[in-house]
Amino acid sequence: MGKALATLAPAAVAPSSEATWAALQEMIPSAAAVDPEAFATELRSAPLHDVSWAQCLKALKSFPAGSSAGTSGLTPEALRLLCFDGSPLSDSLPPFIAKFVNGQIDQEARPFLFGARLIALLKADGRRVRPVACGETFRRLAAKVLASIAQDEFKDCLIPLGQLA
Image: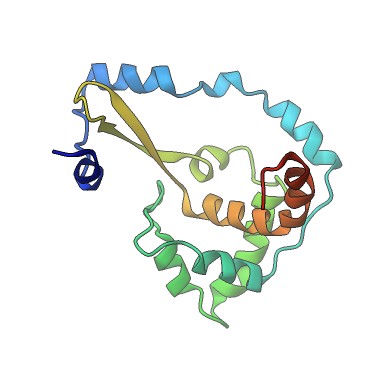
């Protein structure tokens, strides 16, 4: 099979085994390697951002059709269908997403809202694994909203480096 055709072929899911789990653990950084207090210190001095319904809706519409669900099972498409203009969710979604954007998610909820489903796919050689993580929909939505808020700041930082046209 040629390389072009091989890229179109679906990847096989790695077997559920101790060896697969060990291979994944080698590739994924430990949560202990991150110092959450270092991030918290920076967040305390950062300005808070308001999030509007229009920003949430624009971000929801930007997910490609068929985007995967996170650990909750909620897909971006299902959330978009639930959040029509005037629905109870359209009023409560922006303040909830603002909690993500401003680093105000309760410590106890973070493992659930910042977690991901991890799937191990076999690489072309059939021996090594490729980890694929499907993050929680609310966290992915918040990342899109935050990127749109900080878009101009990103441009100011990246254009001088030649990283953005």
